[in-house]
Structure formats: C-alpha cells, structure tokens
Image: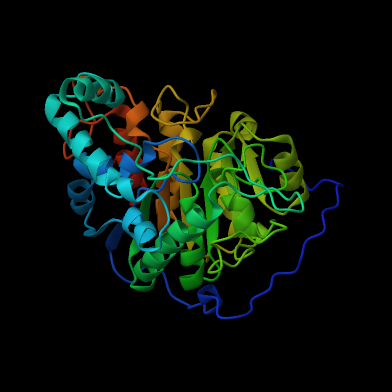
Length: 409
C-alpha cells in the first residue's frame, strides 16, 4: 500500500508555462514508431561529489550491449557520449586544463579491460598510475564546492549553473531521439540526468507516466536538502516543488510531471522532510516494506495502475542501480542495505517491457570505479553475447535487455 496523503499543508505555486521555453511546445506522439534503440551516453556526475559514474556508458558498450540488443531484434543507434567538457569550455565554465579528463578516464578503463581485470578498476589505476605516471584525474573538470548562499541567506544548489547547462544538453539529445520514434536508453551519470530525460520524454509523450526505481526518493528541494547536491533533487524539480528558480535552468519548466504520474518502487533511505512531502503528495510510493508485504509482482502491478489506470499511457523507467541490494550491485556510490534482489529488479524491467508502452529508460549511478572485478567463470544462463564485466556493469546491461523485452522463455 503506498504512502497516504498526510494532514500537513504545503502551499504550491501554480505551474506557469510562459515565455519561449522549448518545453512549452509539446508534441503528441504514438509509442515508438521504430523498433530502434537510441543509446545516449550521459557521463554526467556533477550532481554529486563522487567521480566514476561517468564511465558507465563506456562500460556498458564494452560489455557488449549493442550486440545483445540487436540479438533481440532491435536496431541500434549510438549517439556517443555527450561532450559536456567541450560545451562548458566554450562557455568558460569549468577548468580548461581538465577538458579532456573524461576521454582520459575512458582510455584508462579500456586499458584495465585489456589488463585482465584481476583487480578493481580503482586499485588498478592507482598501481598503474604509480608505475606509469598516469593517475586518473577527476572526470568532472570542476570540483564541487560548498553550498553557497544568496545575500538574503537563501541556500543555493551546488554547481547549479553548470548542472543546468549539462542537463540541457541531455534534454536536447533525448528530445531529438524521442521525437524520431526511437526507444530512448540514457545511461548516466548520476540521477540528476532524469530531470533532462523525463522533461524531454514528456514533451513527445505529454501523458507520460514514470516508474522511478531507487533506494532514495531524490525529492528534496533547496529548502530541505542536507547536502544541496542536485542528484537528490531531480524528482522534486520535475514535480514543481522548488520554491526558487535555479541558475542554468532557464530551459526547464518545473512541474512538467504531474504527481499522479510518478510512482516509486524500492525506497528505503528517505530524509525526514522528504518523506513528509511525499506523504502529502499524490505520488505513489512503494517502499521495501511494501515489497516485503505484497511481493514484487503485486507492487509493480499497483505502481503501473497508479500512474496509468486505463493502461494507455506511454511509460518511462528511471532506474537507479542502488535500488538493488549491494550484494548484487556493489558498484554504486550510495549503497543501502535491504534492497531489491537480482530477480526482483529483473521482474520490474520485464513487466515494464510487457506493457508494450515503455518508451524510454534511464540507467544511473552505475560506478565502475567502485565495482569489484569480475567474479570469474561465467555461470549457466549468463548471456553468451556479453563480454566479461564487473558485476554491477553486467547487471546494468542485463536490466536494459529485460526492459527491451528479453525473457527467460
């Protein structure tokens, strides 16, 4: 049973759709017109203070996702990795000396693959760097700073302007992919990217419903966030819960996603004020306790029914790998005990595919730098089309395939 509305009152400002904001011009589209996957690499980790998630798009490619998707009968279009550093450099944002850091990190990752992957990637890089003078540098090109404040004392989101510029690039790329009739598979990066992808998907599919699978709600606002890191806020921003306008987000329309079109699955680490706002809202929330009580089959059924009662809305899956228990997905930066099992998370993805209304998916917070090395010999039932990969990377590929319709039979 989802969380209910609480008696707490929270005044909301009405949604305004004014000016030349590109999100105002919505298109009406049917479900993906082509059986084509558009893969967008969004190596964006500015929304938090830990590098490593920028390598996830490369890691999934190197693990063989293209060939495995094509085996399912899909066409494959790879947009490559969005070049955030070049964009920031053109605008004088970030550290010019670090503009090529992401490419440097990718080169090191590929060298690690060739080394045999006996050590964790970060351990190998440390040893490799000491031996060869080539330590991995920060992929962000700009260090996160402490939360600033306005003259009136209002707190500011860390790196807001930089984040807004980066998410605009994701929005534009996803918007183009969705409008072309492709299934949009965006691999982050941190969960900040969902503000860009969901806003873009909602423009092509105005009645879009979103299933958000996560250990955390990512529904803090600048008034409630303990850290002021944006990766804990994108859901609230999409829902229109912010009381302030963020620098760099002139392109974005807060409130573009209605509360009754968002359902969470797997929450188990929620901030107090965040929980109060969720209880007050019309968002459907299914925590790990709900899964314990009802089972994953009933929970996914209830979640889809909550956002799509007439079974006719396009659906989007925003999947944070930390929704999965760390036993199965250790390679992420915000591990929380008691998460979804291997089969439970696959079941969610499989059920989303079986609706025949899934139009896009985010896969976020996969951090190859934190992942253990591959476990060893492949097991029976492992996809023979995939290459050896660390466990969380392999799981990320497998979940993408399940969302695209791969089944046991």
